[in-house]
Image 1 (cartoon, rainbow, N blue to C red):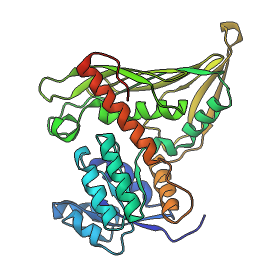
Image 2: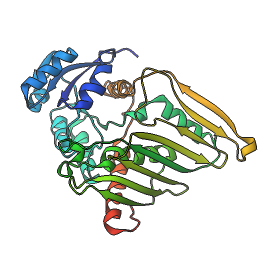
Image 3: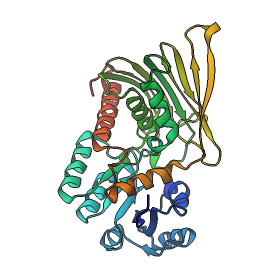
Image 4: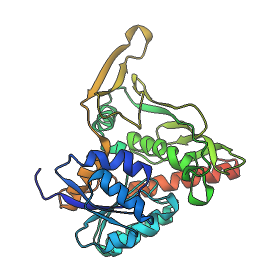
Length: 335
């Protein structure tokens, strides 16, 4: 579709913003990055020069006061998401915020209230849900291509030993569950199109950082089960498999899908070894961050709703809170 590009401001110069998000937006006809801020002016100016952004500010408040900015992207540490999303909404800005949107379901409720009161959209940045390959996977499950989908397993790990990294700081909501596990929880809920009845987790807590460096979890859904492990001190690895009564779907890189080559999933059908048929389903090269921003920009312009609803984000937050409670109680917990 054609419309005036939505003018965005970026609150912070986080690595994900500089390396993953802003670069692909430069080629989008639906998005323009008009301003960026850091509490360190030199860093804001450096980012603006690197990405051709017209205005650099030394405070987040300045971006919110910029009348040219219609929407903001928030890549700040987890514990700041609710605070700055509320401030942005009160300034009349639409908000696309990095995951997790909030550390609690109450935090998501606060954002829902702010969005409603100020007439803006607020969305959690699950870029994977904008990728056509994930949409194809859910369509195949709904079409019973693998029979009744009953089991899912996902692994997501990469090493991070930096004590200064926000993912290794307990006081800002760090840890592998909030960083990587939020994807596994979200994708299980997305593919099964349901909420878990109960969850249980075992966590290995880093003695120095005091965050979970390995979480293994089970989620029991009404008609299916999901298991996952996420880790911040294991070798880099990603894999997902969804198993049904007549086959399975596999994806080797479920989260960090490359944007320069076609991506694919493996569809294996047949219940017995002699009956198995393998088919590869491909998606054309695309950047999932750009797609997410374009879809959200369309919603800002009144064409459809955000691709991730606040109800979906609240369900994710409830499940993650229950997983943390389970670590403390040693029992199944209800989200």
